[in-house]
Length: 116
Image (tube, rainbow, N blue to C red; front, side, top):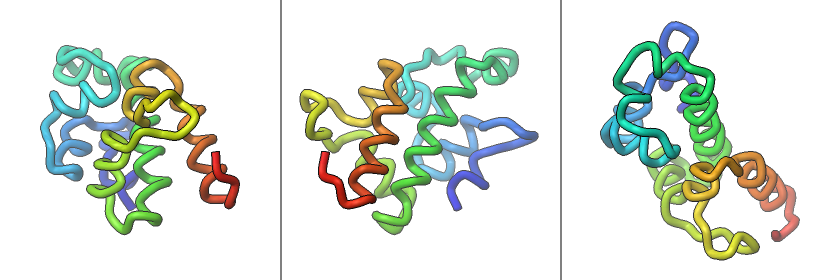
């Protein structure tokens, strides 16, 4: 499961997330709306804001992984698929603007057979 490999010492680790998704730590930071410092400095990685944003992305990718069969495809969906009802914004754009809960609600609705 993706969530298990993305943590280290009880925190979400940008390096492990990047490795699992075959991308860079800088790209991980951009996809959750954080600056480079937030994922490079240990004190900033541990901050509540950084951990919250990383957790939100990992949660979304984790929810999508069973549907797509891989965390890489789930991550591609997260970054590129416009969501109906959100003005053409992607899950990534919504997370960056602080609307991760709405993305998770959308995923739950689709998984329940309710088309948003």
